[in-house]
Figure 1: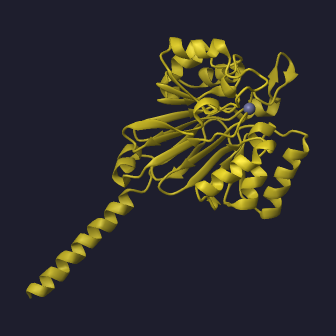
Figure 2 (figure 1 turned 90 degrees about the vertical axis):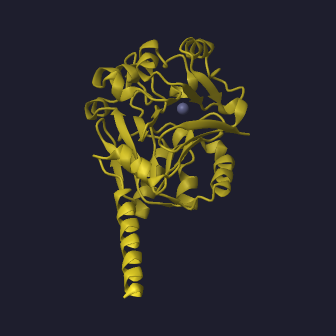
Figure 3 (figure 1 turned 135 degrees about the vertical axis):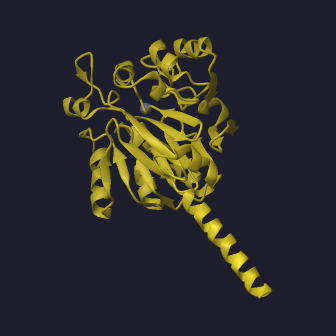
Length: 302
Ligand SMILES: [Zn+2]
């Protein structure tokens, strides 16, 4: 009888554990709770890939890339994939089809099993872009264009809320001073994990920031960490946008001595004015942001 009781007790404990695990699955209603219950670690690495963006995100369940760096930085991306032992990419997000963001997609496709691809749906005419579309089709990878309002589930209680562009903006095509500009419709999205938030901006311009501000409240934009728009160019990081985002830290992805002079002095001054701690890949190497859904820390991996 006593033995039977023990077996029963063990059974109850196992059930409780299993239920506990099930409760840790992400759900829209209990985002914060599930993040904490799961106890997983979120890791965001703004990789040092010279002049360009390549961001590796790891949740308890998934591996995600936002952008892939430039064509001439393939060796750096390959080295990062090897170092981090990445063989599967659950979601590949391309913020916009410029080479310094799309250039390494072929490296990801070659070295990893890619389960889904997302971009802003705005086409361009380059061979790089055509090859990217061809590969997605040839490999039969599920593809979706993200628009304002979409929410991606990154697993482990982490979600990515798209703040722009709108479908209408993509339909019209991005324009700056009347001329076509692919930066304008860069995907802007907020990564959310419990109390931690990080804002991703691609190469957003001031026009992009204005659109995000007009469609979203400051509460929806506010983030603890900001991935600097457009490598710290003075054509974005406007005062209004920084006021709404109100980040504590900013990660600038740029190449040492780059020809554009990124990050621009004016922008660094603006960050300083807002008391935002600056991390730069050209100075400190890869920027690693780690969070447990409650607190976070940033370290440089040179
Ligand atoms: Zn760029």
